[in-house]
Amino acid sequence: MLLTVVVLLAATIVPHFLDRIYYRGPVTAHFDGARFANPDGDEDTARPPGGSRWRFFWNAMTGRDGRPPWPQAVPIRAATLADLLPVTKPAPIPTPAQASATPMRATWIGHASVLVQTPGLNILTDPVWSDRTGPLGRGPKRVVAPGIAFDDLPRIDLILLSHNHYDHFDLPTLERLWRRDRPLIVTGLGNDAILRSRGIPAIAADWRQAVRVGNRPVRVHVTRNHHWGSRWFTDRNRALWSSFVVTLPGGNLFFAGDTGIGDGRWPAEAAALGPIRLALIPIGAFRFAPGQMASGSHIGPPQAVQVFERLRATTAIPIHWGTFRLSYEGYDTPPGLLKAAMRCAGRTGFAPVAIGRPQDIPPVAAPPTANLTSDAALARCLDTPAVRGWR
View 1 (cartoon, rainbow, N blue to C red):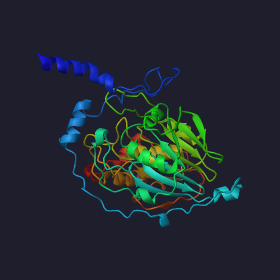
View 2: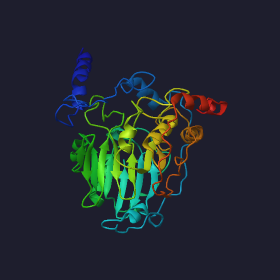
View 3: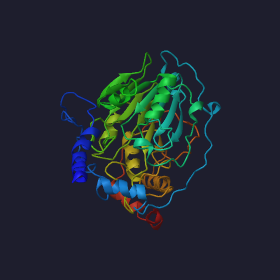
View 4: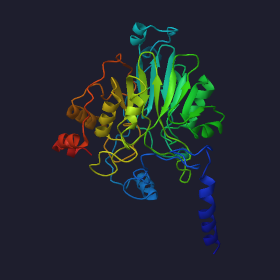
């Protein structure tokens, strides 16, 4: 009887204890006064693919979901300070010629963490240097070391923090960065409350709001994507998820964060803020059942190509793959499928890069043709024995 009472009390008390109120504010089209929502619908993000949330986590922890094996470790050549863009001051008010020639260098650190450098500004997206991503130090383990050792990072001026899932919102790393550099952190509504609990200030903004970066001619626009947020089981959607556009003199930076396709209109909303020189687009953690090309919360490579097209970006780097094993696909499936999807779409400029290898980003080019590749056309083109054989 005592055990029954304890269990019933736990079932009543624990969910409320694990819930958190991260944000209070007026009701909007995507906030009902308590929780945020995707205005294009949440039916596809309501539960993990393939069953209940508890079954999903149990299968992931026990390895009983039939996922193909991944390598235990992947060797890389990490970037050093000598590989990174030298620290220089930008022209106070660059001329059009100076702006178009502004250098930009990007280094994929792993998962959704990317260092993007322009003169006088070092930007870091969703920084994660921890070995595991999950509550209480548990969760998926890295198979590849960070592409830049933490001590080799240059001074960080700006951090873009997309949402509060552990594989994107790594408090130990954020604490180290704040103590060392005092960067400006821009995130969606509510996530700043989690940071404040560790003494880290941040600016939280809603979709379609912008934050100025010091006295530079740079603004961070918080833009819509299609996802959800939670740190525990019962604080779901208490804080906002987002993508970002950073307006820069030499062409904008777009960071998709973590996203499904939703209504597919949000990339065009980002593109309307100006020409995108570099887009950081996720391609992994999309296959939760054999043959699946996307899930409600994550885009797979075919949909990532469609996002690239709708952004009309000059260059894109695929992220969110090959660092933590989060879903069913094999280690090499995301980059291989991306290459195939780009061939099907007849596009260039969006190709896999190696972790730790800095990439010089070309200047903004004339936007590609506005013709978009349809789902049906991609599906027909990708219906080959080789693609069907990828796990």
